[in-house]
Amino acid sequence: MNAVLSLLGRVGLSLIFIISGWGKIAGYEGTQGYMEAMGVAGALLPLVIALELGGGLAIAAGFFTRWIALALSAFSVVSAAIFHANFADPMQAISFWKNIAMAGGFLMLAAHGPGALSLEALLQRRRNPSAG
Image (cartoon, rainbow, N blue to C red):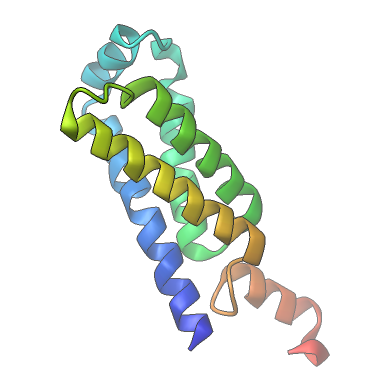
């Protein structure tokens, strides 16, 4: 049961980043302009896309989970502070706290790992068949 819940939790946390990464590719110029309007260098967009899309896919698969979970947790907090700190706007306040909640989920994932239904667990079983 825990293995399935861990898998579903990883997929749930990763989907918003996978979808957002694809969206940034599709709307590259608009996203770059928005970043620059918020004081963030548009040249960072390829790194943001790599983290969101690549990191999201890695989390879903359970690969390099702890490190990527830490990176996505930090990214969620930083992006909340930069892009969603206008608490006078209720939608921005909700987005801010959503990012903080996701950061918390990623910290839990970093603390507990990806679970048995993950690429990491599969690779570990192949390296050490007697432990599985």
